[in-house]
Image 1: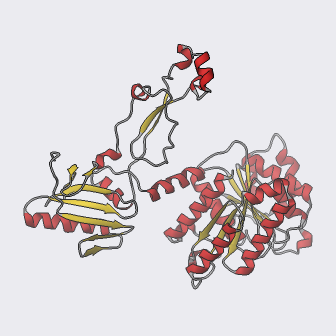
Image 2: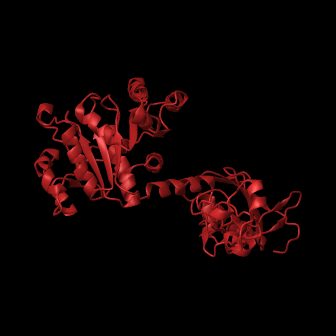
Image 3: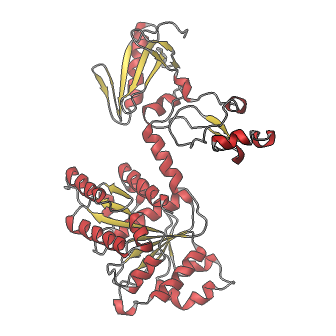
Length: 454
């Protein structure tokens, strides 16, 4: 349309999953197509296209488009009657800035993350070390040579994908390229974090001295999220001599092997002839979620499977030889040599708890004691991720908010995240795909927080 004044026929307000056009509301999974069908029918009755201003209440952004009686959608630009100019929705795709334009600045802008804010993709020239900021006197005394000041021909092009979810995603699929919302950018960043591969193996320990805090549940869900997204070889290890239930909570292989069966084979597995496939004799592969489980043997007494720090170290060496990620589901005795040896080999500490005051206090005491111990224990505590799981359907939201606030106010842990109640988390063997979407997104956020510490 020409850049004359644009008359808006209808205003469509998008508020999360609900849409309203005047007094007409559209909700549910079909809200977006239903709203477009309503506008199409109106245009068909009028015999001409109608102009719609869509307002995203979450971001505050306005977008203009037209829709005709056949359902064809097109972008609209130009000043709106009685308001300032509305940017073209096509600005989300942007025009790639050339290196020549970027070279006009004396010092190029720092590279922008593909997940950061902003709608226009930018090509950013790499900044040679010689043209980084230096004191003014040095610049005046020693002017850079032409070679030192030369811009690199190699540029890093960072193009943001258009929106794929919500109303913005609907408009993108209709042909109006829209920038993603803040929520979608945050989701993309979380996926990026949990998809990383790190140099060398990484060990994550889940700890809370009170049983029933959700350590095994968190081990299963974090293993699932990290493995599915990163594709990294991952093992969950039940380092617990007091009836650890990780084996009961996960899929069993065609054997009943446990860590006790692994112990006599450690020397062979650490040898040069051992292969990663040899581990299949001792671990239980999760066919849906693609990680392995090294289980304990909960059907025997603790005294029969209690071992010291040296044995824990040797098991850990085997696991880190064949796996990139090792998640340790720990026991409840924080003085036990197995527990302490696991902590000494940990890169990222995760402290699960329910919303119950007793479990939260147990988590807080653990973190405080580690801080008081100083050194590396203090670093683990300060970088810890606290996961507050809602254990029953009758827990009030105010209770969850209060527990999170208390952890944060006390400076306990780097991140405090919540997992909503989900009946699917009560299953003996958790089917991650059967969980509610909000639950899966919460575990993705928890996984991203953990990945930040690796």
